[in-house]
Image 1 (cartoon, rainbow, N blue to C red):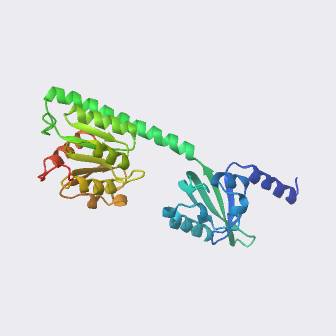
Image 2: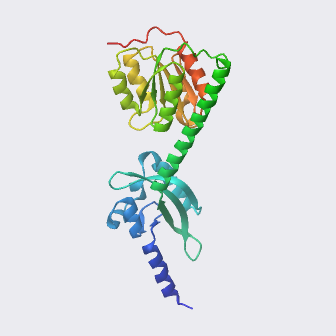
Length: 294
């Protein structure tokens, strides 16, 4: 049987060769040691990590949450976060799976915190692409089903659609969803302008000379969120109607604040019928003018 020193050397070799970031943190989150993979994943030299606090690689909006996880581990509790965000030394955001656990001495006292983090950025992106494709497929199937029923009935549960002539600006950062929903709206008589994010929406609206009657926009988007887009467009179109959509939980985005005289909120995933119903109801509300203010 190998002696204790050789076993320790073997463990050290495993840590050094691991592709996962393995760190030892002091209970105040200072990095006491880390393996080469930690330096590679976080984009710092090991000397730039050791002796610095772990929040160096934490996004600002998650810092308190992650520091509380470290405190829980220091108090003796192991925690696992299947998906957690980190920021590399070059400023690039990455996604990791993270496990924190207490390191105890021979008297079972916690003396440090161990951290094992695996870079799952690529896997997470592939999974997100798959979910977007499935969501787009579901919306497409709803569109086809709804279209077939409309051909049979000539209408959709009392929703007035056939005479639609209004212009809608649809903003969503998912290309598949943007394409399917835009086609659904066009199939029901609306003139549709499409944009990939808030900044693109401002450019599209600026280049469009005729009135825009309604904007449908995701709440959470890169560069400019839906609230910011609404505020900017209202300076151009004071009576603009705005339909916010989001797949986030209502408590996380404050949906009550998104509902007003000229605004409404619709939760994702939504059916084509519910979207068209919300659009028609919002367009039929009394407004002064959709013309652009100069």
